[in-house]
Amino acid sequence: MYRLLVVDDEEKIRKLIRKYAEFEGHQVTEAENGMEAVELVRRSPEGFDLVIMDVMMPELDGFSAAGEIRKASPMPVLMLSARGEEYDRIHGFELGVDDYVVKPFSPKELMLRVNAIMNRARPQEESAKRRQVALEGLCIDFDARVVTVDGQRAELSPKEYELLTYLVENKGLALTREMLITNVWGYDFYGDDRTLDTHIKLLRKSLGPYSRFIVTLRGVGYRFDA
Image (cartoon, rainbow, N blue to C red; front, side):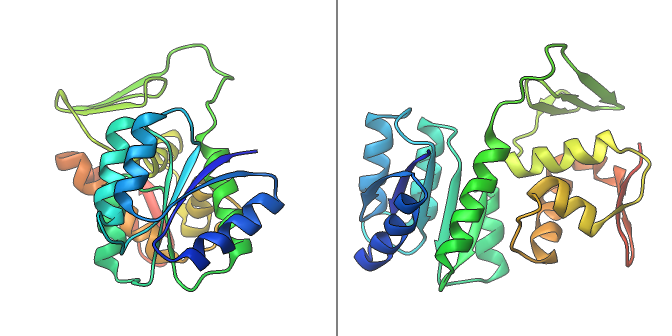
């Protein structure tokens, strides 16, 4: 059971999501604009497991609200939008949004995405030993989830970090697009190759001079060479 905060200025959208979420056993709290959502999270930062939020809303838009929520809590955020342009997706991912769903959407698919996000967000308890990797000026502390570039901390989104981790752990191997999507997003991912390309672009930007470690294999996928 997850505690979901559903934020949309359209009541029928909130009720539709609530219906499917509660059917799966989740607990739902509703907010009709971004400002209300931010206040709810500020009052109870541990009160929600995930936020499902529309982009276009009065008072405070979804992107701005997601930024404010991130200041109060690291909880996952799934954005809803009637706009599917690449700029909007990139902007959302740069803010650390975990997923982006374009309206109209399938409620069943939305719940699958919620479950996939929460499965990835669960803390990994298997390894108590601290793991770190240094590749020239690129340093990765896997347990602290901290990446530094030439001594400066790189602000990676959760998905950028997971993608980098998978690439590094399979250093030198040719990784197909299907392998990357399956192992980073999960078997129940309902997106397309553009999502992977967008995150590779953002990750390269975050790595600065070490973006050269991510090699594009035309018609295949990517390889991490360091």
